[in-house]
Amino acid sequence: MSLNTLPPDRLSLTLNALADPTRRAILARLSLGESTVNELAEPFEMSLPAVSKHLKVLERAGLISRSRTAQWRPCKLEPEPLKEVDMWLRDYRKMWEQRLDRLEAYLKELQAKETPVQSAKPKDDRDGDIK
Image (cartoon, rainbow, N blue to C red):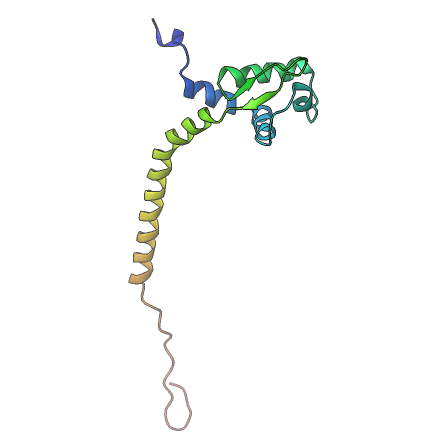
């Protein structure tokens, strides 16, 4: 099996789903609580089938789930894939924090080595003439 035919891993599915601003907006809305497809579609100038396609991507990535209560099909945020992204980013965040800490220490070291420039005042003799 070539690399191109391997099924995407969960992290890749999640990152792909998060790559679209419409899907991120849908997730932000769902962070406030369950919503129907119609409620989720309201702020967007797109058809219900287009919103439904976005929801399918989010559902495939495990970021949302849909249930059925009579005619009502609420969508619900599923945070687990976001936690996995956070865990994956944690090592990178730690690396960058360490690098920035080292840069800060280096800059402080450079500032400590700088000597204040002393202004050279001309000496005046007793009669007030400056030489």
